[in-house]
Length: 415
Image (tube, rainbow, N blue to C red; front, side, top):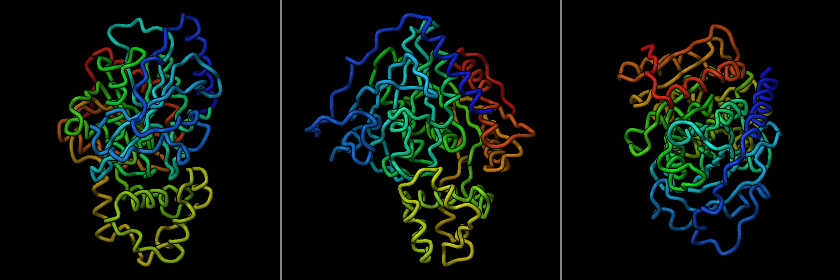
């Protein structure tokens, strides 16, 4: 059902966008190439990111400001669900910060409909965090889009582009592909918006209103961006945020998944957190099987990891009976749990009560924590639905929520 709905939305998008004359693209306004580049970068998607110099940060990345552009290049022939649509697209690399506030470089893909924007004010823009849930740079949205593949939540992307909005797809797991590293993801999203503002091309620049959106692993990144924005990026005001199926508490989600069909997500998260937070001491807890398993999944994408690690318990790979209860691990997991501070922007938080992958209870706790701190949250819970079904069921509701925020109407709060 999800594929059918996504294809329908895509077909409608292609039809609607071709009915109006295309606006002139902004390819001539590309930012200057990286100062340390001595040879032209290969075409986007022609080689994997690890072999593409476009993804290599300059040695002086620490001298760049967060959101400052390092390089850019157009991405030809972006498609949605395999159907060509009239879009302009660019990859933009920029400085951001990891979870420990150390400088690194990330990439976002800006996609702008060629249909002229005739609405009030500047064209709305959405940073859409497509769930990567992986450990390899070849799984990142920028590479997936450049190779003509479909990102996760492609139906939602079609809904946003059908509204004639600009959409940015950040590689929010960063250059180390760290899954479930909350602060790093939030930084990458916010600095990606800064980079697009600085890019200032094709009618998308400093004046456009921005919202953020994401489901599942993308909701984790979106939630962190929303929560961090007032302190980390007050220059990046957001009109609204939509998050669904949110893994807000990595410890609670890991306990729920452990030993089940989707336990591969737990192993991927453990690897990602071990990489981003060596102070957790996860590597020191691994037994010989754990060392081998971590080596096996390193650099792999979501589908491969899930296929290799069903019905596995994390303690099978460790020298302790409950690795989540080790103080250093518990402290880092708590550091990556959402809810410590309230977002400044209205939030649409949706979740299926029967979600079989991400338990709804820990998301309810997130909403309660944000509400107690004065946030505006519209909580929506569906009595029945699987994890992937919920994303499809709420695509139009998300788009309508964001449209209302762009229109400036008063948000609903269930707090």
